[in-house]
Image (tube, rainbow, N blue to C red):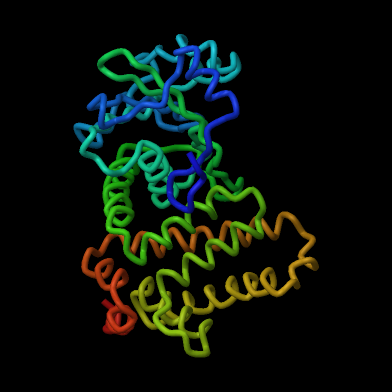
Length: 317
């Protein structure tokens, strides 16, 4: 398994061959077994509810619904099994052989959807899989979604999670369409998983360009700022404010790319600015995933994008 430039990533650990030889944990071929039920622990998930069904294939379920992780003692460290005992909920996913989006892609889409709707400290370090025939599998996620203290919210309610459900469906559709927005989605995920603020900032900026740009001509900052403002603003005043905000944050991206960020030695300010760019991107994604017609145009040619962005909010509506 090679590490690929995509939404689901991670390489098999160096002990995978030994586990396979022992017959304990195997690489599961979904086409062969028909269906896998995956259980992903929602660590630091601040929801007090019990169960919420996203669809017939996906649900948030109480911790008591799954204890099969105890059978993975030969591959899962004791401290990781203890984390499973301490969580309040699992993300349960039923994966059919006909489904062309992988388990890893679904897990990452859920985490990005949660970030779009309401950033929290929630993360998923690994997940378990079981088939009807009794085959068991274990996947460790090597890319962990990070959180920023000033941005993370301490609570979730059912209304938030219903919005997460809607966002999840749209993001999976974007990923499966393999259009231009897929690139923006991958870059957004990389930004959310970056451990260095500079990497996160540059990936957010690249994701913004992947959504908003429609020309190779000069004046990219002006073009991006105006496009962003047209999408998110609902009045002349709000568009001016949005444009100014985008320009300020995009200048920081330029400082990083052109080697001037070494002067930014105030860690708290760097994280504050990263949170601001993260929130800017959250607002942008909410507009994009909430408008199917706009998504189609942004996945199209440059002329389609330019036309759609010119019309967006043009009357202040």
